[in-house]
Length: 140
Length: 178
Image (cartoon, rainbow over all chains, first blue to last red; front, side):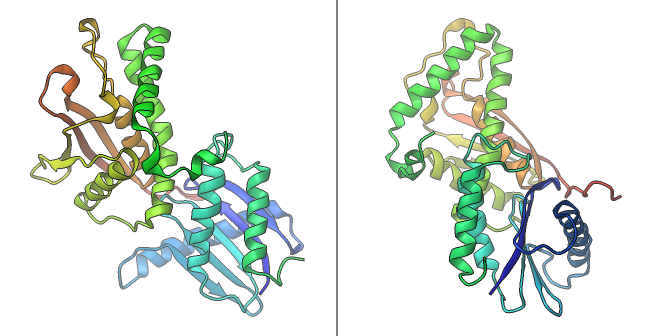
């Protein structure tokens, strides 16, 4: 289980936080933009094409050697986790990340302005711990 | 801000302390702005800022899913009042089209111990609630309007808060796309 990177985007599309543990050759900012630029149309596509209830809040996409997991809260906070192929079905985990890390350390922190990139060191620390705890062997 | 506060059990926060703190905020605002309309506006703004954060806490705790009509939303709002203020407002006076309803309170924890002086009859003392509702609904893609129809502070039998659904807000498109 390896986590390569994480991206958090708010409801209006502002990139709140991004972190890459493995460099993929492009700059982190570019990577974040590419990722979000890819996910947004897919999300629209999914909700349009869905034969069932178009309630979209989780998406998982596998490629040959990595997977992208996407979770969106009802309030529109979006979490993208980029991992290796062995990680599957982590919707609950991403929800936990939202409830226990994002809400606790960003939303309830009055120092963190809503809609601005997250600067809080405490949040970064907690996020790191969360990832380490749940993807033990992953982060070098 | 100390972290301990957030761990405090919601039920154990002293409601009198809460009521008095809110009263102190309102009276300070009255001193600062001297104009009732400005105070109403300011309370609404404060509520809005609370609402946009509070809804995230609500979602995280209740794990609530999407609402498919306003009645579902109303139930969730009712539940949120129970959760955050310890009161259960009645859902009444639905409009025929189902896009408007009222929350009726027998007791309002914000207005305990409060008497409005005669010259402040236009003050919407609990306007922070309107702002909080507006802010939290906006975060879940709903544009709503809220206002007080009746207020016990002004001699009415109950406090009635009216909520009107205006429109659904669409997801924002990332910059650079149409």
